[in-house]
Amino acid sequence: MNKKNILLVEDSLLSSEIISASLTENGYKVEIVSTGELAVEKAYSSSQIDLIVMDIELAGCMNGVDAARKILESMDIPIIFLTGNASNAIFHKLISVQAYGFVLKGVGEIPLLSTIGMAFSLHEEKKQTKIYNDKLKKAHEELEASRKEYLELSENAPVGILKCDNYGNIIFVNQAALEILGSPSIEETKKINMLTFSPLVRCKLSTQLKKCMLDNIHGIYEMNYESKWGKKTYIRLHIKPFTDHYNTNGAQLIIDDITENKHLEEKLRKLSLTDPLTNVYNRRYFIEKLEEELDRIQRQGRGTFSIALLDIDHFKSINDCFGHHAGDFILIKLTETINNQIRKIDCLARWGGEEFIILFPHTKLEVATLLTEELRNNISKMDTSIASKITASIGVVEYCAGETVDSIIQRADNMMYEAKNAGRDCVRMS
Image (cartoon, rainbow, N blue to C red; front, side):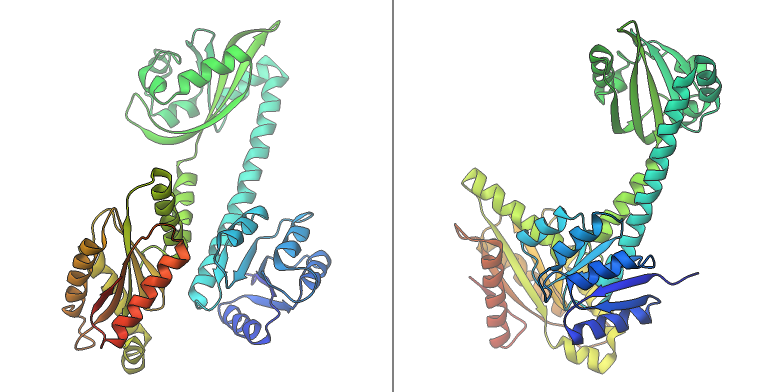
């Protein structure tokens, strides 16, 4: 299997050397350039680049976002950004160029490798989807060529095809549609009326079908559907009305089972939102949740929440004495302990290294402090079979009117360091 070629765009010599070494050790071929202009030139002159890892802030006149935008004007290469700033402004810039993700500088090689792997998977899925859509479009054109060819193709098509009259009665169904719906026979399927059958009415398919026929417009819809015969599938529907002298006399429905694609999308989505080691949420997801909580309070003009920032005491000595595998085990054990205690409405995320952060929605400081104190006590009682005792220093704060995401997290960080200075294994609140 050929190695994937990665273009690394980084103007820091030290950073580029560290990242390049990590990627090379993991089986990638790496080329390095230091400016956005050189990245554009390299991308246009080489057909051997499979992915670009691009620093947002670069020396020269062209930053990483502008360089990416220029490259993507004429070619389809997955691009991942490196950034030291996880602000909303950065997120909007990345969205504007349809980046495949970003990695915060200094978080280690695992998030970078995970994001690269996900980018390759997403890019491949994108290519396969285009191939599929091209094939489907071609199939539609052929179906329109003649009624005879349509019937011959429809009966053996790899996608499900239904045809109904203007009143919703099914007048044609092919074998693929029977398999997708789990129907035992054509006769049983034809007993369904597309406009009045209650499961179709509930999922709004009947409404969309009626609108497409009434307005003579095409429609594409996706839905999670349980058929009359109990089969659960995620389906994509393409509704095309049939017209005769400008009057609609029915519609054709092309049905495709996209359940596997949806499962893959969900898996990739989860990978982008979780920490690969502990399987709890990552910093990116937590910031989104915190922003939602702030928006909710500011929109309603009432309510509160608290957050707790937690750091394992003397974690470096655990790694030094017992090895990083032992440190990883401690982190996993810690997240299990926290998840077993916090409430369903609470949100736990790995903030970085041995730091974790918890959101307590609708929770005042006093209650959050009690919950956190109990959590600190349980952590100190963890049986890890490695270190004699694991402890944590925790800072707890409650939202104050007018605060931002950055300011409340900074207060929690200050409280956590107060706990450190107070001798560790304690909670400090504000």
